[in-house]
Length: 522
Image (cartoon, helix red, strand yellow):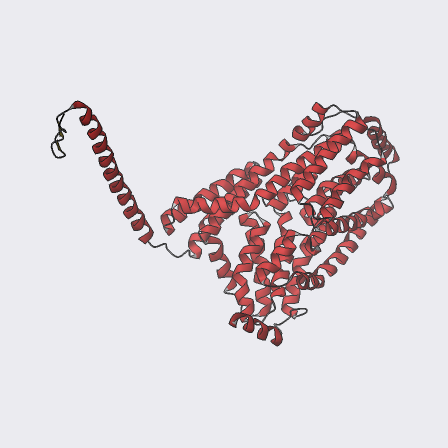
């Protein structure tokens, strides 16, 4: 049998079998040709899009979403009395619209900015959910009630606030975490303070002030390591330089809380109320000093540099185990406390309102708020809107005092808009590093200012990761505790005063300049 004749142009095939095979091959070739044409077309379109130059992000473009954010937040809080999630999210989409139609950014670029910023906050979000578990299991197991019980027996109203400040500062310095401090000794101190008749907002101010003092000064803290890394300083010269602003702020805070505490010294304790709380606690829980080992183990684990996420989750597990051992709860009940928190009735409404809380689900409001803030911050960071505003502020920094002032104000602004304390350190740190070098100012001046402002003010803004965390963990209303966060408010002011007086503002040493030049040459 002879071979069939083929002609590609006419697709003439003499036998049916070969016609099928040949048709398949021709179809594949045509698909490849069509695909190549399509890919080429897309490639050309991408080149055309890339050739479309982005406009410079000017102050006008940057102010559009910022002013809308301020106005919508005012409306949401003061007039409509609604949650602030939607105003922040709508402001984010407005920023995206401005970037796309005004600055020639593509949606993929904007989405990339959002994702990168959310990635930065994922660790904090996971910790937040785990803290909800810790609170739920520690209350159910009797850990928190035991801490409150003995706190009411030991602490007196006159010394309670200064003692709270110092205790939180010590624990936070040891752990390197203001969040861990607030979630462990902080929630117990809130209960003790309310039992002593001291308003929750004042107690929270002492807890936050002490927690952030220790967080700021601890070499174990992430922000304490981040700030010198962004500024170009070393860790321990950064910590040593912060003593100039932090120690006076801490001393003033102790004095102020002591003055407030005097108000409660002459007031006769309502022993009936305190006895009622003690009876309600001992009647609902098995109060046992051994339960205090749970927070001690967690604090030791953090000191030994166990990562925060597994360390805190381990604390939640220990709480669940302690609940089964000391309170006789079932495994199912312990698992429920992980997710939904503690629910119980002590017969005393005050105690019930204090203890019926916690669980991973209790943190979802805060988690969604952080996501909204990260979306806005990511868009404004990616499209250079934050930089445009910061650079405009920097243009007024002609003297060293003005430069320090701008360095203090910029992280506050980033905390307000971007909603994350890490961004409030990273963005100004990258922007101002060269300016400090050009003016002969040591990098530790910059790193100190970043922490004096960025780290400390994050807890004061409700939609910031720090503020949202403290509000949720300590059971606060937004803004109400801010006037009592003395250290967080005083420290930036002292830093500004130092900037204008020149006190502790160090210049770059000539030897250091020579070393830097040698390193660059090598």
